[in-house]
Image 1: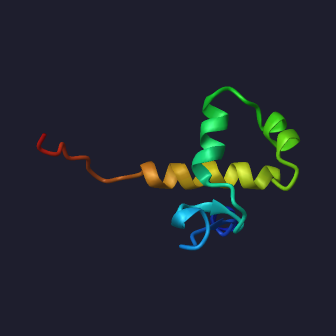
Image 2 (image 1 turned 135 degrees about the horizontal axis):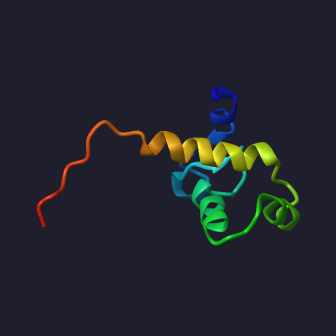
Length: 77
């Protein structure tokens, strides 16, 4: 799993510090949006030549880790 997470980089000078794939200007959120819109991994890789299958898996691993919280608290509204 850690090898996948090594593909996620955070640099304040790239995409305003958003987590990106391998220092490229592809934020993790873009890949997640494409997948959630119904695009397949094959379609994404066809449209974005410099991405690799492991990059898509890395975005999913990263999102999974972010969602693994111990507790969720409602904020006052």
